[in-house]
Structure formats: C-alpha cells, structure tokens
Image 1: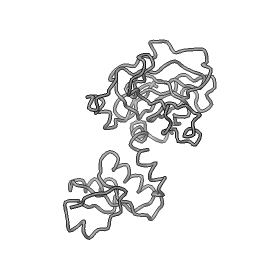
Image 2: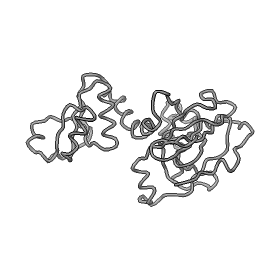
Image 3: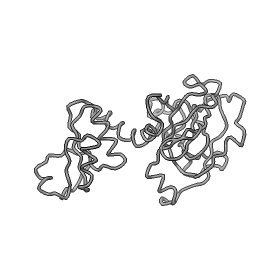
Image 4: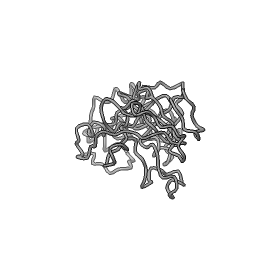
Amino acid sequence: MKILYCGICHSDLHMTTNTFGFSSYPMIPGGLKGREVASEEVRGGKGGERAGVEDGEAAGDEELPEEELVGVGSKEEVHEIVGVVTKVGCKVNKFKVGDKAGVGGFIGSCGTCTSCQNNLENYCTNVTHTATIFGGAEEEKNYGGFSDIMVVNEHFAIRFPNSLSLEGGAPLLGGGITVYSPMKFFGLNEAGKHLGVVGLGGLGHLAVKFAKAFGMKVTVISTSPNKKEEAIGRLGADSFLVTSDTMQMQVSTCICAVSWDYT
C-alpha cells in the first residue's frame, strides 16, 4: 500500500523504546500466496503502513521481488493501516488492484480451530500479528504500519469507504475497534441509553463519538477539569464529572464496568 497515513497506538511508543523488553527488529512480510493481496501503504494515522489480503493455499506462483518486500523507516508495531491494493493472489475475491483497504492488528490465523470457525480469530493460538513482536525467523517477520508494503489475508482486511478520509479513518482500526466492539457486544449502541466514559484519552474520545452517533446520553468522568470543554464543546458529551470533586461524585450515580476509587 502506498503509505499516506497510519494510526499510532500508545503501545507503539512503548515498542519504539523497548519499554516492554521484547521489541524485535526488523519485521517484514513474506511472499504472495493464492489468497493474499499485496499493497503499497497509503498511510494510516501518523506514519506509513502496508496492506494486503488473504493467507491462502497455493501461491499464484509469483513472489514479490525482494526490493518490494523490504520495509523502510521505523520498525515498529503500528497496526492501524490504510493503503491501496497493488497485487492480489489468484483466489482473492474481496479486493482488486487499486482498491483502498484497511488493516488492523492481525493479518492471518490458522482458519481451522474452534475460535476461527466461530469468527473469533483474535483468540486463535496461531494468529499472525500485523507486526512480529515475539521471535520469528528474520525473513518471516512482519514490520507493521511504518513499512512500504505488506501482505495480508483478505479476511483480515476491510474495504475502505471513499466517504471516509484516510487520515481520519486509520485510528478506527485500532482505538476505534477497541471501544466499538465491546459497546456493540454489551448493547451500548442503543439510542436513549446512558453511557459513562472514564477518561478522555485516545480510546475515551472515540467512545464518546460512537455513543453520540448511536444517540446515547454520555457522561465523561475525568481527573482533568480542563478536559470539560473538549468533552462537551467538541465531542458533544452531555455532562462532565471531575473525580477529585467529592461532592459532585457523591451526588452522581455512575455505573462502570471497572472498579474505581472516586475519592
């Protein structure tokens, strides 16, 4: 995918400095198989990323030239990717050359285990991450979002709508899905319901935007009084609570999915 944008998760910053102690460099994709799509990255949120499509059987005998497989720039785990498909495997049905595609945290899985069969590929013990984090042979590592190109199972790529800006849509593939998925799962996507959002960081602000789009009432709970204008003025939250304001917290009834000390 021709790189234009890629979202940056805070974990990417930790990977940059090896905060977790297991950063592994470099990370590079392999050749093109029958169900795979290669793409030049179009860029996703703040850097550059690669893209592709499905991990399949019989390669369309052609492998990408080595010079097209080597990523350049930072070697990090960035996983919020938007790009343009430049090649497709012989069995790809979902994409054609020139299509815009989005890629999140995974680019493949075994496809046969119980989790995969139930569309829960994120629980697959053989899932292939967008970037190789632990070990792996040097020639089989995946770079992540700061590469030039990438190869990905088509099942793990999405068609990127023309109505959505590339720079605005890329973060939805990481932070966006992190809040959207549980909101859908727990029924927090129905108009009229009241959602409490603890913290207005990268995930929190997206949760507010999703909730308002769903027609919900939103209360933002924060330790920072200066976030009130952003919460209500910019994002459209209905109310704002500061955790250090004991009186305010005592008169408010908050239902949270996590335990929290409001004192």
